[in-house]
Length: 378
Ligand SMILES: Cc1cc2nc3c(=O)[nH]c(=O)nc-3n(C[C@H](O)[C@H](O)[C@H](O)COP(=O)(O)OP(=O)(O)OC[C@H]3O[C@@H](n4cnc5c(N)ncnc54)[C@H](O)[C@@H]3O)c2cc1C
Image (tube, rainbow, N blue to C red; front, side):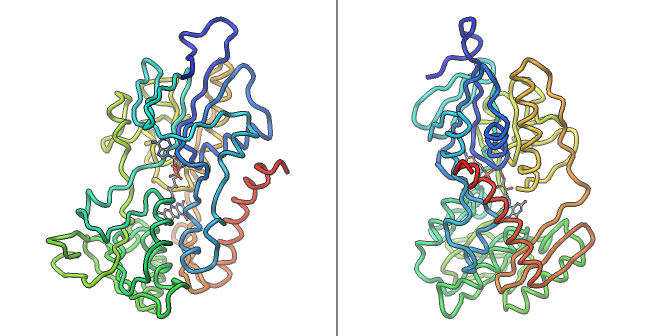
């Protein structure tokens, strides 16, 4: 149990609670390692696993381009070097007025200022219906463990036509552990593949899917009487159904009474500060920017990290938050096609080739390596 500022005696350290070891919070840990922790602050990281798995490298792991451990960030080592206490548990409830968080292990953690970067929760069973063959891509760590333990699947259905579903279709089609590789059907949803991406990108991806023999069905997948369906069509027989259908807001966010957007994500302003409680901050998929639309994507969690770190540093020093996360007009998305190539999307532009995959590997490995070096004390 940790004492909070509102009950602390004079001179006692303020408590900053970091909930979730996500992409934005690792940036804060890096900032504290590089520039020192704010003085007079006790910080605690509450997160269920000692590692953060970098989802961008999972399709490459399926295709045998990375080892399973290549995409891990060591949260425990970073927290230790940053002078942050680590509690391996999960937030299950929050009282922002009493400044308390409840954990799955039955604990209560008090805080003065809290920051949330827990990502969203899987919603595959809610959208598709439950079935023993269903594997939700979230949480990504559990997904990797289930895929690694699978007996060789001959036929795979992937549900979800966004970048995650597309890359996982390519990854499953190029599973190196299985010969011959599985047949893959992508149930892309009624909007087709990559809604929101430029026509040039969608064309290239469609061609690559066809070239690799991945069938695309433009309808939403769901289970009906034990059969996996898309529209009115059965996609069975399928050994496994992978759902990359986006994430839902954790239920404890809305239940806390914090301001949320309509689906229940934690509403924040441009400083990533709660619009209802000024001592609460959030970034990444758990947050919803109210001043502007912002897609739930790792890119934004990563780029919002330094802004969040600077604003928390200011608030802990008794100053108002001043930094604003302004997303770039266009972001670079690099989709691994699993066959030694990748497709790049940048606004209206598309490009494809082995050099795109080399660029993706360079960016991904550089991101991981910076945290490995900090964790090692380099
Ligand atoms: C296959 C796949 C590929 C993707 N590729 C890309 C890509 O190339 N580029 C891109 O921009 N996006 C990509 N995404 C999306 C990206 O994974 C997410 O947008 C990103 O992970 C969100 O980061 P985050 O920091 O919000 O949360 P996460 O990365 O999900 O981290 C959340 C952290 O909080 C912890 N946590 C969870 N619940 C709790 C709780 N209740 N209490 C405490 N801690 C908790 C978790 O263990 C984890 O450490 C991909 C997604 C998938 C599925």
